[in-house]
Length: 532
Image (cartoon, rainbow, N blue to C red; front, top):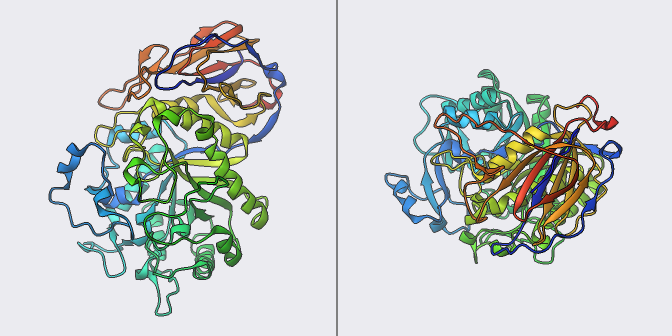
């Protein structure tokens, strides 16, 4: 149960284990007066964003669902070419291109806007852009997939319809290299020119997807930090002339953290350490980008050199803190090589290799919202979730487009959490994760995100009235979620239900285990939030 505040929006998440028994409530935690909460920074308006894999746009071999009944989709599919180097082809199955003109998909995506839509991923590294019609039925030598004009125009049209700006990366495989092995910009120029010709705009780009795993991602065998630095400089020189308004992100690394069991590599291919790349790059970037996965999914157990996790650990302090360990590693490199540059997480989800089976359930929504709160408080400007509607970590079911619990968490974040980040005055501890923002659209209002990942009911003394938005599910591994006790659904057209808060009086506010609550205090009088 949660009580209401006025003038501040508070997000509260109370978490429990899968076999939770409610224990006695701890003494109420006091927060300072909302009007006195100090500003600690700000995030981009498009902070919460999402990926659509390039492979979704072209069609091809993507992560095989855990539900083997879906394998009928492989009928009539091409062979298993396009599987990343060193990876087991049995982990994948063919999926046809996504229909980005689908009205329901567009409506649900637009509700999360404004956002960035990142169209990249491992397969983008070796995708051939066919700047003529008809496109070839199979990729030319040195490529593994074909992107035709119509499908890329579909991306531009989708972005325009959903208030999303495109983030992408370039093809870097053998098909775009000269006799000496150096990267050539011809394909990239055709790609950028065509985007502009159909009214599209690429807001930002990384040179390639995950250069730490370059060979697995399609770079030539033996590709190293020196080769990456050479090619990156060629890309920057080209991009400054061909697309002067496009922000250059980099390096886009993955898999390095301060944790002792950090991920080392995917598959059987080698890795390139990010410090070695940065020494060669010249580090000419607008933002320092990296990826974060706290684990490899069950489908990659024994294949990826990355730690595993389990549903029993999903609410643990250790699991939730893994995003901090990755941030610390890459922030230190940013400070050393690109001091002052903003940080972007351009790809993240619960687990690499398509997500774990519980990524599609309410159990993962705590990680999702906790990660957004942690990173915003620590100055990260953009977080791009993988994916919008593909595989287990998609916010929408890829077949039905039914919103999953993370979608509803994203929608409430979008509606209630503003871009100004405040100091809640509460140190993160088990059962008490508190993140504070200005309330979106309410001058002087404040938003508080509180995550209770203990077995004990949490109480907070809040001095103002509020509106309460409580997400819950029993059991946690459900793909449905309730808002204030009513199941959230969309109709066949993708029309959202009314999202209404419950009036909550000032005083001691209690949060039952296993709930996520947004409390909106509309008139806190916080001077840092005036004009929000």
